[in-house]
Image: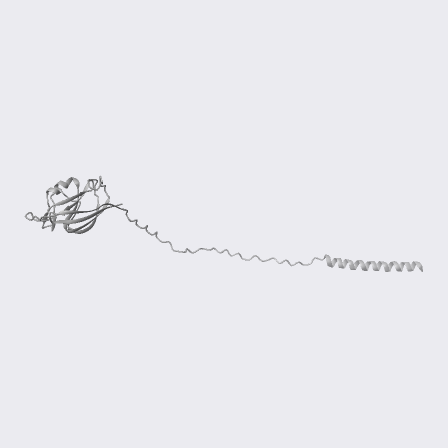
Length: 205
Protein backbone atom coordinates (compact mmCIF):
# COMPACT_ATOMS: atom_id res chain seq x y z
CA UNK A 1 0.00 0.00 0.00
CA UNK A 2 2.76 2.41 1.00
CA UNK A 3 4.64 1.96 -2.24
CA UNK A 4 1.53 2.81 -4.24
CA UNK A 5 0.88 5.81 -2.09
CA UNK A 6 4.38 6.99 -2.52
CA UNK A 7 4.20 6.51 -6.25
CA UNK A 8 0.95 8.42 -6.40
CA UNK A 9 2.44 11.25 -4.43
CA UNK A 10 5.42 11.30 -6.78
CA UNK A 11 3.20 11.37 -9.83
CA UNK A 12 1.13 14.25 -8.41
CA UNK A 13 4.31 16.05 -7.52
CA UNK A 14 5.64 15.60 -11.07
CA UNK A 15 2.38 16.84 -12.56
CA UNK A 16 2.41 19.87 -10.34
CA UNK A 17 6.00 20.53 -11.24
CA UNK A 18 5.22 20.24 -14.94
CA UNK A 19 2.23 22.50 -14.61
CA UNK A 20 4.20 25.16 -12.84
CA UNK A 21 7.01 24.90 -15.30
CA UNK A 22 4.66 25.21 -18.28
CA UNK A 23 3.00 28.23 -16.86
CA UNK A 24 6.33 29.80 -16.20
CA UNK A 25 7.50 29.00 -19.65
CA UNK A 26 4.44 30.57 -21.20
CA UNK A 27 4.82 33.62 -19.08
CA UNK A 28 8.45 33.84 -19.91
CA UNK A 29 7.64 33.24 -23.52
CA UNK A 30 5.03 35.94 -23.41
CA UNK A 31 7.55 38.29 -21.93
CA UNK A 32 10.37 37.22 -24.16
CA UNK A 33 8.38 37.34 -27.35
CA UNK A 34 9.55 40.38 -29.22
CA UNK A 35 6.92 42.98 -29.50
CA UNK A 36 6.73 44.91 -32.67
CA UNK A 37 8.06 48.30 -31.74
CA UNK A 38 6.65 50.88 -34.03
CA UNK A 39 9.42 53.39 -34.55
CA UNK A 40 8.00 56.52 -35.92
CA UNK A 41 10.63 57.71 -38.27
CA UNK A 42 9.80 61.09 -39.54
CA UNK A 43 9.75 61.07 -43.23
CA UNK A 44 12.38 63.43 -44.60
CA UNK A 45 10.66 66.62 -45.41
CA UNK A 46 11.42 68.06 -48.75
CA UNK A 47 13.94 70.76 -48.08
CA UNK A 48 12.99 73.60 -50.31
CA UNK A 49 15.99 75.75 -50.86
CA UNK A 50 14.66 79.17 -51.53
CA UNK A 51 17.09 81.25 -53.40
CA UNK A 52 16.34 84.66 -52.09
CA UNK A 53 17.21 87.22 -54.65
CA UNK A 54 17.16 90.58 -53.00
CA UNK A 55 15.54 93.01 -55.32
CA UNK A 56 17.63 96.13 -55.68
CA UNK A 57 16.24 98.89 -53.60
CA UNK A 58 16.77 101.32 -56.43
CA UNK A 59 17.70 101.07 -60.04
CA UNK A 60 21.27 102.04 -60.80
CA UNK A 61 21.41 105.57 -61.91
CA UNK A 62 24.12 107.58 -63.51
CA UNK A 63 26.33 109.34 -61.05
CA UNK A 64 25.13 112.87 -60.52
CA UNK A 65 27.65 115.41 -61.74
CA UNK A 66 29.61 117.01 -58.95
CA UNK A 67 28.47 120.52 -58.28
CA UNK A 68 30.62 123.06 -59.94
CA UNK A 69 32.59 124.93 -57.37
CA UNK A 70 32.26 128.67 -57.49
CA UNK A 71 35.57 130.36 -58.30
CA UNK A 72 37.25 132.15 -55.46
CA UNK A 73 37.29 135.90 -55.83
CA UNK A 74 40.10 138.25 -54.88
CA UNK A 75 39.46 141.95 -55.31
CA UNK A 76 42.68 143.64 -56.41
CA UNK A 77 41.24 147.09 -57.17
CA UNK A 78 38.16 149.03 -56.10
CA UNK A 79 38.74 152.64 -57.03
CA UNK A 80 37.22 155.79 -58.45
CA UNK A 81 38.81 158.14 -60.92
CA UNK A 82 38.05 160.99 -63.31
CA UNK A 83 38.51 160.77 -67.06
CA UNK A 84 38.47 164.20 -68.62
CA UNK A 85 37.04 164.78 -72.07
CA UNK A 86 39.81 164.60 -74.64
CA UNK A 87 42.03 162.56 -72.28
CA UNK A 88 42.57 158.98 -71.23
CA UNK A 89 43.42 157.05 -68.12
CA UNK A 90 45.69 153.99 -67.85
CA UNK A 91 45.46 151.50 -64.97
CA UNK A 92 48.43 149.15 -65.27
CA UNK A 93 48.13 145.73 -63.65
CA UNK A 94 51.88 145.88 -62.98
CA UNK A 95 52.55 149.50 -62.00
CA UNK A 96 49.24 150.31 -60.31
CA UNK A 97 47.97 146.96 -59.01
CA UNK A 98 51.22 145.14 -58.23
CA UNK A 99 50.58 142.15 -60.53
CA UNK A 100 53.95 141.59 -62.19
CA UNK A 101 52.67 139.34 -64.99
CA UNK A 102 49.32 138.01 -66.13
CA UNK A 103 49.51 134.34 -67.05
CA UNK A 104 47.63 132.53 -69.84
CA UNK A 105 44.22 131.32 -68.72
CA UNK A 106 43.96 133.61 -65.69
CA UNK A 107 40.61 135.36 -65.44
CA UNK A 108 39.79 138.83 -64.18
CA UNK A 109 36.32 140.26 -63.77
CA UNK A 110 36.16 144.00 -64.45
CA UNK A 111 33.19 146.18 -63.56
CA UNK A 112 32.91 149.73 -64.86
CA UNK A 113 30.43 152.43 -63.89
CA UNK A 114 30.69 155.87 -65.45
CA UNK A 115 28.39 158.86 -65.42
CA UNK A 116 29.40 159.65 -69.03
CA UNK A 117 30.19 157.39 -71.99
CA UNK A 118 33.82 156.31 -72.29
CA UNK A 119 35.67 153.68 -74.29
CA UNK A 120 37.04 150.78 -72.24
CA UNK A 121 39.95 148.68 -73.48
CA UNK A 122 42.33 145.97 -72.30
CA UNK A 123 45.69 146.14 -74.09
CA UNK A 124 49.25 144.98 -73.56
CA UNK A 125 51.56 147.50 -71.97
CA UNK A 126 54.00 147.41 -74.89
CA UNK A 127 51.38 149.05 -77.17
CA UNK A 128 50.24 151.67 -74.65
CA UNK A 129 52.42 154.35 -76.29
CA UNK A 130 50.51 153.94 -79.58
CA UNK A 131 47.24 154.23 -77.69
CA UNK A 132 48.33 157.46 -76.00
CA UNK A 133 49.42 159.20 -79.17
CA UNK A 134 46.60 158.03 -81.44
CA UNK A 135 43.06 158.92 -80.41
CA UNK A 136 40.30 156.73 -81.84
CA UNK A 137 38.51 157.55 -85.07
CA UNK A 138 34.94 156.74 -85.94
CA UNK A 139 34.75 153.90 -88.43
CA UNK A 140 31.59 154.06 -90.54
CA UNK A 141 32.07 150.51 -91.81
CA UNK A 142 32.50 149.14 -88.31
CA UNK A 143 30.00 151.58 -86.83
CA UNK A 144 32.33 151.98 -83.89
CA UNK A 145 35.57 153.49 -82.71
CA UNK A 146 38.76 152.37 -84.37
CA UNK A 147 42.27 152.60 -82.96
CA UNK A 148 45.54 152.91 -84.84
CA UNK A 149 47.06 149.69 -86.21
CA UNK A 150 49.31 148.17 -83.60
CA UNK A 151 47.13 149.00 -80.60
CA UNK A 152 45.21 145.78 -81.17
CA UNK A 153 43.25 145.73 -77.91
CA UNK A 154 42.54 142.35 -76.37
CA UNK A 155 39.07 143.64 -75.48
CA UNK A 156 37.27 146.83 -76.51
CA UNK A 157 33.88 148.23 -75.49
CA UNK A 158 32.65 151.53 -76.91
CA UNK A 159 30.78 154.30 -75.10
CA UNK A 160 30.35 152.46 -71.83
CA UNK A 161 28.43 153.79 -68.85
CA UNK A 162 27.90 150.47 -67.05
CA UNK A 163 29.68 147.26 -67.99
CA UNK A 164 30.90 144.03 -66.38
CA UNK A 165 33.13 141.71 -68.37
CA UNK A 166 35.75 139.00 -67.85
CA UNK A 167 39.28 139.13 -69.22
CA UNK A 168 40.78 135.71 -69.96
CA UNK A 169 44.51 136.32 -70.39
CA UNK A 170 45.61 135.07 -73.84
CA UNK A 171 49.40 135.26 -73.38
CA UNK A 172 51.96 135.84 -70.70
CA UNK A 173 52.59 139.54 -70.38
CA UNK A 174 51.82 142.86 -68.76
CA UNK A 175 48.43 144.42 -69.39
CA UNK A 176 46.52 147.62 -68.68
CA UNK A 177 42.93 148.75 -68.33
CA UNK A 178 42.48 151.83 -70.56
CA UNK A 179 39.67 154.35 -70.04
CA UNK A 180 39.38 156.63 -73.05
CA UNK A 181 37.48 159.93 -73.08
CA UNK A 182 38.69 161.12 -76.48
CA UNK A 183 35.51 160.42 -78.42
CA UNK A 184 35.13 164.00 -79.75
CA UNK A 185 35.88 165.66 -83.04
CA UNK A 186 39.26 167.32 -83.34
CA UNK A 187 37.71 170.79 -83.40
CA UNK A 188 35.77 170.36 -80.18
CA UNK A 189 37.43 170.81 -76.81
CA UNK A 190 35.41 170.61 -73.63
CA UNK A 191 36.89 172.30 -70.59
CA UNK A 192 36.52 170.63 -67.19
CA UNK A 193 34.09 168.07 -68.47
CA UNK A 194 35.04 164.82 -66.77
CA UNK A 195 33.49 161.41 -66.45
CA UNK A 196 33.42 160.05 -62.93
CA UNK A 197 34.39 156.40 -63.22
CA UNK A 198 34.33 153.64 -60.63
CA UNK A 199 36.12 150.41 -61.47
CA UNK A 200 36.44 147.10 -59.62
CA UNK A 201 38.91 144.43 -60.74
CA UNK A 202 38.53 140.96 -59.24
CA UNK A 203 40.78 137.98 -59.86
CA UNK A 204 38.87 134.71 -60.39
CA UNK A 205 40.46 131.37 -59.62
